[in-house]
Length: 155
Image (cartoon, rainbow, N blue to C red; front, side):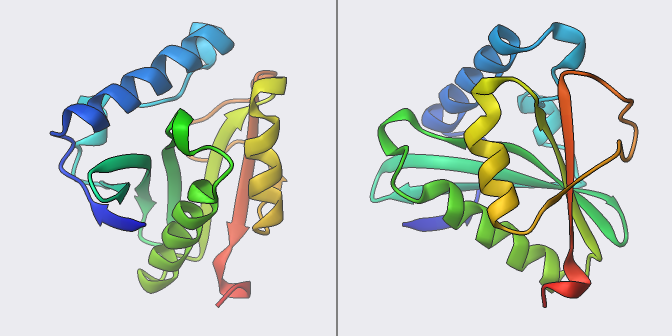
């Protein structure tokens, strides 16, 4: 698997992100969907990565700088054909390593509370993320689980 910084121009990446948004809106109330669209993912404070095997897209993840010492994981998604093959773990490890290299002190995320998000929550817990309260501009929401990883204890 090859993970690269992506410019969000590939039709495969665009389709995967649309699938991600469609699933988020099908699973959570609209006001509780915090997934970013293509234009939002192109902002200067976000680095977007895609994972490939040859010419086949396996998944994606983005890291959003919130402030000089805190970043957020966004748009983590594994292609349906690649689920269960370790893609999510590799993308998450890649992002944690990048966050450490950038000297962030913490890496946070928001995910859903529904059963649909169970595997994602378990993956984050396995990597050392802990449940926390809302961060950045988030508000308490019964449909959101907030998690954070203190990176100064990981390195």
